[in-house]
Image (cartoon, rainbow, N blue to C red):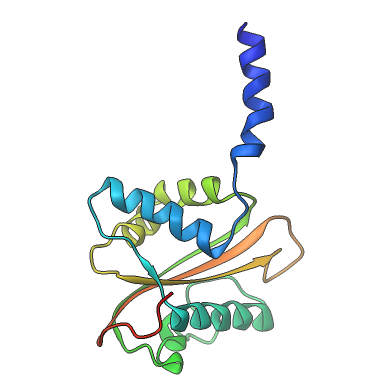
Length: 157
């Protein structure tokens, strides 16, 4: 019986795991926020665009870090998309295959967890690519830009 349950778990796990998409990452982060009695994050198209630009910059420059090799902040991309920052944060991850493992990993990292559970953040934007920005690799690379704008959101989904 124990063998049967182990085999069933191995077969069922891939079926229950979700591919990493903007929607799946937001949903998973919002599940944790709900458990902590926090309002859900809203996807903001301006932050999606900023996260895409951020990912492109890391691909073009060949780095993977919160700060660029020439010292630029990750938040440089927000005003360029008319997102005037009141609060901002960023989570990065690479090499992940499923949303569940990705977000669980962030929840085990104090800084990433703080961003997901911050009561200061209302909005988020996400970029996802296959592979890595610096070299060939498996899995996906993910940028999440968290924020609260100085003015009410106008470009949310």
